[in-house]
Length: 164
Image 1 (cartoon, rainbow, N blue to C red):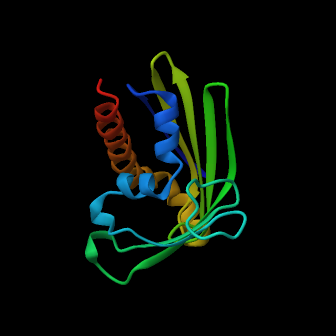
Image 2 (spheres, helix red, strand yellow):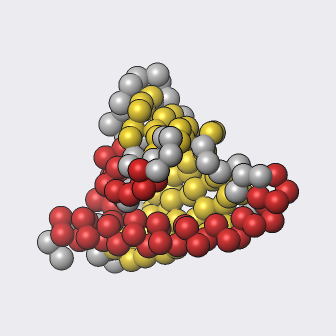
């Protein structure tokens, strides 16, 4: 599988950065407008609709329509793992269905002084079998601006909220 990684320091407390990324509101805030994101449903691990936090076992069904072109693409993602404690946190979402043949996104958070180190690591394959896997490294062309924007937005929102 191809991989992509991005790391950023956010000048905001670890707890605030963790909490922001633990909700669908955070997902909506971080998804660029041109993706036309629509969260269709969220079900927690206990079967409850619209949980406050996305715990391990939560299932998110959403759709996107990039640039408003073509039909909406449905995406189903599951929070496969979630760990929190002692100034560090991690959660991993796995795409069950969507535009990628494989997608595993690990979000890591580390207390770093008064701020937080945010690390995104994605393992993915593009669709199309062997050909898709062969060209998957070129997927970074789309991932780089998307994650640069996500990290920039995280900093803008959380650094403003923390008054720094």
